[in-house]
Length: 525
Picture 1 (cartoon, one colour):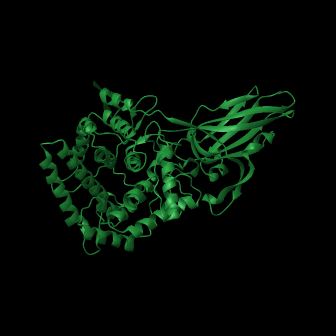
Picture 2 (cartoon, rainbow, N blue to C red):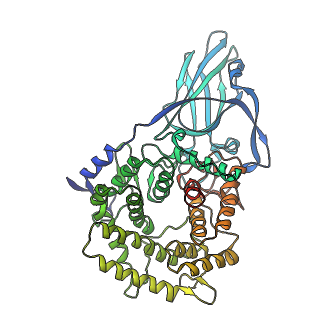
Picture 3 (tube, rainbow, N blue to C red):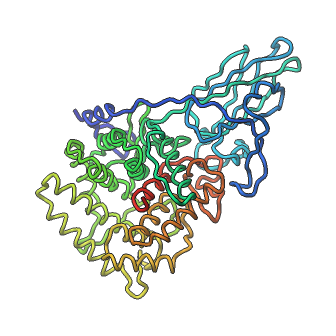
């Protein structure tokens, strides 16, 4: 059964109930783990860590009940590692009988620096309702308080607003019911001789696990949504670790079930209370549906999923190829922009051209598997796209690809042309060697998403040493700054960078940053 629906005045979607039902059949039963807090800590100035803030232990958690808190008293609880789940704590009163309610605030943080920022000072462009804090009133004690929302955190800061002069509040047994679709204990981790790479791998695995919930979330703090760009990288990391094909199938069917009436799939979908597509569209994200399907097929050889979703994949390719000229040049539009990276400080035309080549090659593989009779049409277009890239976009004098009317040279163009294997292997190695010489150190890029592609391009070009060094300089730097999980945004030259106007809403556990587990397994193990 299929029907159309509209979520705004401009976009209509087609709703395929059969595919939605298949998606629902693969919904995971989340694993719950009771995690007790590790210690009581205090903020401490430490230039080694993010924004110059770390913590020091002031008492074991067993001593929490010995602290009798009154107006303006504050205590910070450390769970020892990043957690995603529901928080609960026991609360009692000591002294005279309660003659007033207890009022306290609780603030959750993934990094110590978050605790130094006041939510009332936030003036960014994302909703401040994402700030992880609550104000609680309790009229009767003792009680066990279980907060209804799910949080993404390591630290919980409790500040008593007031009791009364006659009694104090006592807290004990803080616990988080942590959730994930997977269990890291089931993963056979490689034993690496390089201790730094081993730690980079471990943090990547934790990041991935904490983002594997009801779907492959982009981040458990926010947006808690299923985005195609994140999903593509999470799925690759998952194949190298947890090998949870059901969750991949759930997400593929969700996207396939809700295209627009024109056939385009959105960049992300909401899943609660029911599945709803967002009205955001990105040229490369739509194409990456093909990549996710092709990567899944390569891993599982599951013809049922391929047959169910091949038409959806073909629609994405056909819509993209409508933007290709007769000579093989991609023409981008404002209505369907290419993402590549958050930064808009570089021209993205050539990277977009490379991505359509990259995904068209994957689509042709799928077309061969289903015996698509129009296969030759796609191979002919691929030849045109390749020829245009090599003759019009590659500058033989500089040894680099150029982009846009100003013939701009940027890292993204070289990286995606490398990943698309537009040049032969020897030329590809030379291309990335020139990129390292002329365009490194990297500037203007602040997402692990783009850093993943740069690192993979170095590996694909045979520059293993440079790739490993970039992993250490980028993901390793986050660990040095105190990361338990990898971040949504990170600029090594500006560690407190935020795309939202304030770091208080930065996500410090984000799906698209988990890929060292994939890179290490594929290229180093």
